[in-house]
Length: 187
Image (cartoon, rainbow, N blue to C red):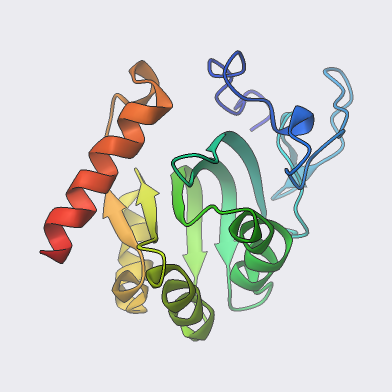
């Protein structure tokens, strides 16, 4: 776990701790002190704690003009016990929404498990975004976690998308591909 770093090749394009609107503005990181844990395993210090005990994130890219954010996740998405969706909404996405972000891409290949509760936070979130043609996309979530999302009918509110080579694309191209896909689904 400690060797899994958030994707860092876009840091010349965007750094959340240098973005005055970001919830992580002025956050400082250590490259040597491992203090955050997941399943009793230390995780890389570059991951951001947003209030969940089981899920960590990294804001990889935010584009205010095109109203989208790309966020990488690691851990266990647990709505049943930790209510991670409420924490994510209150501490991250609602702040971004107030600053014009209405399209969210969650890179979820390191989301190991999903435990559902009710879908009211997802339904409310989708309704909030729909007025501005916004959406929520989950990119490359492992099959076992996708299964639990689908079983809970949360796929009524989020879109799943697979893009195995996403690291070779610029963030704007990832956004454009997903946006085109979602617009085709809506038509």
